[in-house]
View (tube, rainbow, N blue to C red):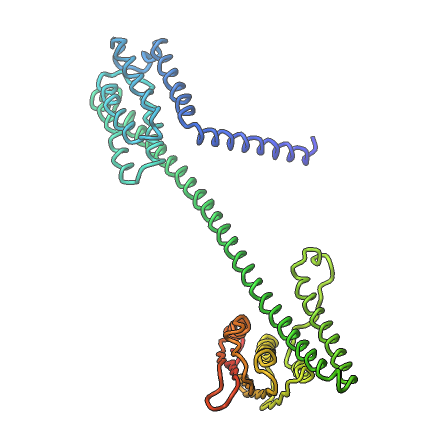
Length: 415
């Protein structure tokens, strides 16, 4: 026969055996009494067969014992096994007097071996201290037999083999119990890992939703503010300078297309169909994109003056934070500062890697904290990612306007 076919046959046989065992265990968990009745019925039948066939006379020391005593002893050893799993200690202690009578009268029934079954179930379910004194009690009938019939049932012939057999039964119960506890711990650990995995998935999804919400707010809010400024300027210029109005319309179209492209790239990550497509590798904005951002704000009618101190050399993630904070500050100025406002940006880069950005305006409009809190929340969340601080509020009296101050500490060296 082909060795591969033999291996396949062995695997199938093992699989069928495992499935059968699984079904039996599942049935036992659902209907424990049915299984206990079958097992107890088997032991009772075996004990009665030994009684009715006079097989007990082959091992007894006193063949003249009355039949009712042999029947009582046989049932006393076998019937209590019905409760061996629910009350193992009670079953074991209840069988001890029967075993003592069995040894003292010289009946020495083979049914007394059912003490091994009772001790096994006790080892499977009780504490070690309880098991130790139970083991000591089970030895009592064998000691009685040894003293009652020293010639035939001395220590070498009875007590020592019985003690070893009982110890083996107890150790087998302990081994099975240890195995069951180990499997139960693995199942519980697997359940905990599933719960933790689900929690991590929910947290990751919530964090991703928050990130997408921040990005959408930054993209849409800023570009709509620029478009609004351009539209207002174009409306005033339409009657006096058609060329300026046309320029404003062109700028509105360019800004709209740019916002639509950024929004489409952001929303594409939510589409399952894009998993099979090539990923869009367009990078996130960095400090080099600030000039384009500021030019767009200026085109919308907000004069912006920038002052840069030091040389920017920070990681891309920190650059994105600086870009988004400046973008949100200028957006709030466009939306809330009112006409004739100006903005001033001061960016300081230290040699240690620390960054300080201050954006002020001279507006007189409503503060952004009362009109739109999502932008300020997003700025603070981005800043907190790098252990920085963000201050946003009115400028000190009597200076008008609003001030946003960002500070990012030095970058931590790689470990």
